[in-house]
Length: 158
Image 1 (tube, helix red, strand yellow):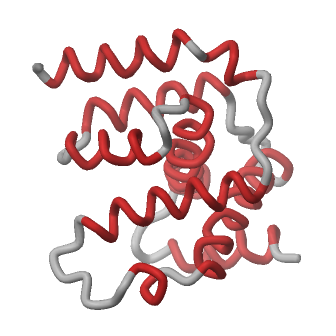
Image 2 (spheres, rainbow, N blue to C red):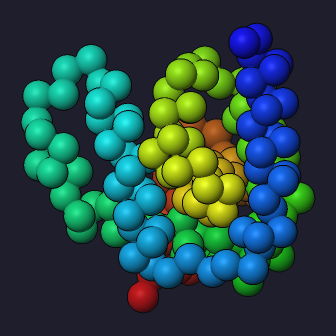
């Protein structure tokens, strides 16, 4: 199957169940479980996974990742007037699908998330979009990243 066909298939699949997914709300625990599934895929693809997954990625680290992207989503909306929208999430998913260098790894992530559109959008795409939105919103460059990241951490801490 060609890459374009794969992308089209995934987009069609996500669109077909979007209405069902939109009515669900993920709990923090569901988000943590999904983040663990994503991190397991990445850990399995490391060239030298010298540590077992549980040691390399303790639960507290996984929970911290989830808290961070949720807090950053809120901060973007409340402090900078840049809420994460459904359209933004859709565009970010399209960007990821079109630009991935590792379609097999991306497919593995989707499988780890049971091809569930809500899990994919909320736990894989949202963190990516939050990172991209921070970059655009704050005009980050190598010299200014720390200052803006620190500002964001201050605004979302607590």
